[in-house]
Each structure stands twice: as C-alpha cells, then as structure tokens.
Amino acid sequence: NAGVTQTPKFQVLKTGQSMTLQCAQDMNHEYMSWYRQDPGMGLRLIHYSVGAGITDQGEVPNGYNVSRSTTEDFPLRLLSAAPSQTSVYFCASSYSRSRGGYEQYFGPGTRLTVT
Amino acid sequence: KNEVEQSPQNLTAQEGEFITINCSYSVGISALHWLQQHPGGGIVSLFMLSSGKKKHGRLIATINIQEKHSSLHITASHPRDSAVYICAVFKIPGSQGNLIFGKGTKLSVKP
Image (cartoon, rainbow over the protein chains, first blue to last red):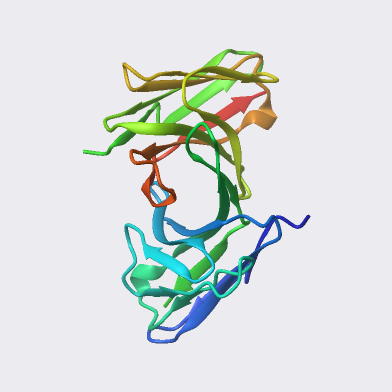
C-alpha cells in the first residue's frame, strides 16, 4: 500500500497563477481532507469530502476548489494564487471509528510558495 | 481563544527523562487524537482516545473527559522522539469536518 500520496512535493507560483495539488489514497477510505499548516498556527481544514461526489468547506476554503470524482483522488485547485496561500498543504484520508472520531492518514505534504 | 491548547509549546529533555505533554480543550468532543510530526514534515497518528488510557511501547496517552484534558507521556525518552506532537479533537457532533488542531509541542531530546 502506498497510503496517501501527494504531488508535487514543492511548488513555486507567481501571483495569479493557478495550479492543482494532487492527492490519492489506496486504502479505500471514505473520507478525504485538505489542510494547510502555517508557522505558529495549527493545521486548518480547507475542504473535505465524505465520499465520491460529496464535498464540503472547512475553516479556510476561500481561494480553493475541490472535487471528488473517485474514492481514490481528491485534488485541490488554487484558482488564482496569492502570497497568503504560501503554506504547507497536507492531504489526509480517514475512516470512521465505531467508538467515535476518524483515524487520519496523512500524505507527505506539498510546500507551496507564492511570489 | 483557541479551543485546543497545548503546553508546553517547546520542551527540551535529556535522553532517558520522563516527558509529559498536555492538551486542554474547551468544547464537547467525541474523540481526541495525538499526532507526531517528524522533523522532515510527515505526520503520523499515535493515538485516538474517547476515554481512559492507551499505551503503545514507551508512549502513554490519557484523557479525562470531565476535566477536558489529555496528556501524552513518553517514558525513557530518546533523541529519535524529537518531533512536534499535535493534539486534535473532534468537536461534537464529531464529523470529519469538525477536527480542530492544537498548535503543537516541539520536543527536543538531547543525548
């Protein structure tokens, strides 16, 4: 099992450019999420999905778009990159535990710099 | 005010010491998650707790639901334990969209 994979690992964008961060999982998990991690702040949820075709916004969704056409893939699109989107992005897949909560499996992260 | 607070923010220990990292939260939760982020950036799950105590090797996690507090203990610490430890809670109703993270505790264990 590859687990959760993310591409690219590093990316530099100019302000206004668009791009897609790729995320894939091979564990057949129902849930997938995108987080961003900034210095001095905890991980923050951008968007999440509870199954193919179903997505919802998290805490910081502005400037990002997602779709989930298959169980395996959950790409994150930056529509028009801004310096405020400079961050490390983590994708995670998860499953629901019978005793509460969702066991999270994280990808290796994508370090994005917007100049 | 942050709904999940961790203390201390930074912790330096000598190899072999017993370490405690604390997590307090101010909301109703369905479960609490302890995560480890390695210096290279990867994040792995250590424990998920709904009540009581869990142990895995030298790591022990406890939770007191009434006091809204959890602790992560590391016995006989080792330099390879150096990492950022993150507490996260599932706010009731506890859906995947309700996972809130603390800012992390950076642990450095010196040989």
